[in-house]
Image (tube, rainbow, N blue to C red):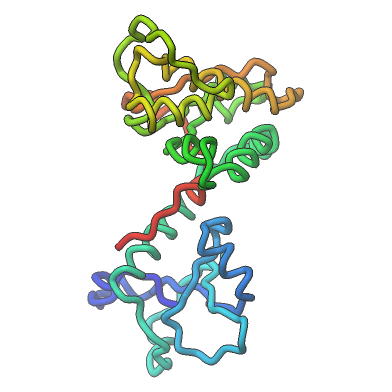
Length: 259
C-alpha cells in the first residue's frame, strides 16, 4: 500500500524519486475487530483492498514494516483500490498515532500497566463507572528526572477530563438531603447526569481525586519507579505542562472514526 501523500506523488522532481509503502497482509476477522478498536496501533484495516479473501479474513496494513521504493518499481503495478475520504482521514490519524506514540521506558509501561488495564476494562461500558472513565480524554506522564536519566524516576500524572465532568467553581455549601454513592466514579456520574454538576451537591474535583487515588493503589513500586506517584486532574494543560509530559497511548479507549 502506498502511504506517500498524493500531493507528493504528484511531484516528480529528483528529490522525490522514492515513495513510502507498507505491506498489506491477511488477518482474521477477530484480529480485524481488535485493530478497528485501536488496540493494535501498528496495524490498520484496509477494507478498500479489492484483493480476494476467504470467509472470515480481512486485509490489514502493517505500519511497522514501512519502507521506500523507487517510483519506477511501481510502474504497471495492479491497482487494488483507494480509500474514500473518511477512510483516508482515519488512515492518516492512525499513521500519526503510530509515529507520535511516546517511547516510554519498558519499566514505566510495566509499572503503569495495572492502571491502563483497569481503564481498558471499564471504559465505554454503559455503567456509571464506564461513563465517568469515558470523560478522561488523556492521561499524560511527566518524569523527574527525565527518562533519559537513569532511574529511579518520580512520576507525575495529568488526568485531562471533559469540562462537563469537572466544575471550575469552588465547592458551594452542601445541599441538605442529597446523598451520592460511596463509589467516587458512580458519584461523579450521579453528580453530572442527575445534578448537572451542581457544586452545592458535591465537589467534583474531590471525587476525581478519590477515584484516581484508588486506581493508583493498583500500582506496585519498583526499583525504577518511586512508590509515590503524584497526580492532578484538570480540564486543560498549560503549554509547559504539555511539552514536559508524554501521552499514554490510550486512544483505543476514546477512538472515534473521522467522518
